[in-house]
Length: 138
Image (spheres, rainbow, N blue to C red):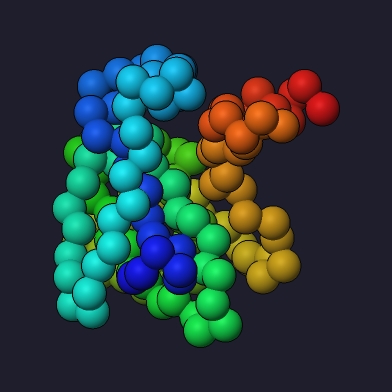
């Protein structure tokens, strides 16, 4: 991943803050967003609670990536959950069903549904804001 093809950005230390405190510190310059450039085969391990975002790929070449998440039961976050087809869940092993027990089970999945995990947006002055708040205000 290079600066041109959309590096991941993190705000170090924000996993220890509330979302709003982290956003405020980013917007007032106390915490910087840091671009993470990586080579093929690199692995990043991070705390999902830290504020982060992807950036646009400015090239014509796709930038494939894989995300594998793990959360302790006490930290279950439905906003990053997945939908599992009931028919697929039913044929999983006991261990597979146990791993996916908190995920939403559905009869079908709309391949054209809008992505729902859009947490952050930018205001007219380029500051990061909570996207859910932005939607309410529009």
